[in-house]
Amino acid sequence: MKTTQSFHSTNKFWAIKFFILLILTFIITTSCDLTDPKKDKPKPEGYQEDIPWPSLADSPWPIFQHDAQNTGRSKFSGPQSGAKIWEYDSVSIENGIVISKNGSVIFMTGNSPFGNGKIYSVNPDGSLGWNYNTNNQASGTTSLVMNDGKIISSTYIGGKIIALDQKGNEIWNYNTGGYINCVNLTVGLDGSIYFVDTSRTLYVLNSNGKLQWTLKIEHSVFGNGINPSLAFSPNGKILYTTGNKKALYAVDIQTQSVLWTYGDNFNVSPPVIDNSGNIYLCGKPKSDERTSITKLNSNGAKLWVKYWGNDNEPYFYSPTIDRNGNIYFGYDSLYCITYNGNLKWKVDLFDSDNGSILSNLTCDINNNVYVPVEMENYSSKIMAFNSDGHIIWQSGLLKGHSGESPALSDGKMFFPTYRSSKLYLIQ
Image (cartoon, rainbow, N blue to C red; front, top):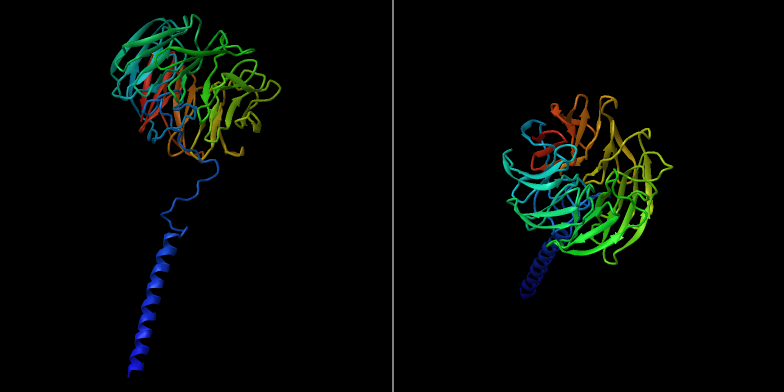
């Protein structure tokens, strides 16, 4: 009898031990299960993350084309229907739109062409917040908004950089004595402000308006219709600027020297930088090549080039790059090129006599792209496409030429018409 009890006790012990082992095995295997749908799936090649840039304001659109890499990509959904909510009458809008920390829309006007400039702040409901008279000719340079709320703008004649608070009061100004008409100002990770003037000089100011250093960029021409644009590498160590004798200059901001150059022709379109530090140039960076989009790595080596159009496109405007790494650009057609340089699709918009893309492109968090198209009779409209090239909506006709660098907010687009009297809110 004792032997039988011992036998049953032993079996019970091993049964319990086996049961516990099964439970532990289940826990371990399920916790390590790589097919768990709750686990993050691998990101596709070319996937784009937002690059933190703490020197910029935490606002929906604090700088030209949204960020220091000129991606034109919003963190929010864009307009849903293309409906015009309001229009604001201004004097003559000279540059692109940025959005301040309190949600106000910032831009500069002047009596066309140029004329004395005023910096405007328009409230989200379309009413005037304030305007500041620069007492100088307006600049075509888009402003930026710093993390402390300072608004940095510029004038053309006198080459003045102006810092305003959120109520439009001047904090400081810096005068180069020259002319500033670059496409955009930009800001480094440490809050230093970068711009170029017509003396072929790159200027760097600290956030209090004190000159830190300058760099004369030889064989470049800034001015006389050649308006350079600036962009930063994702790590903030390399500044890119377009020029004349060279399409692109890469400047090491630590050694304050030019690292490398690319091309031999003025590339009007601003460079776009992706998460990996690759650079996209849309236009004609080499004089002996056709209109193209070119992808360079961070060392200036050409990764691929894709030709498009018929070589007569006056391509001045910034492409946009969506979260999957697709690049959108065009003139009388809208093109979508994949991260690896393959044509994904092309949509014919209009015959070039009737309408064309004459403004910077933008996209939203859902990879929808927003395309301002200039029409006949001094009018424009906005067209929205999804990432497969299907049209989502198009707005009604808007009075005025399509303007520089629209700004996206949560479900909204603030659209300026160039040198006309209208600023529009599209939803």
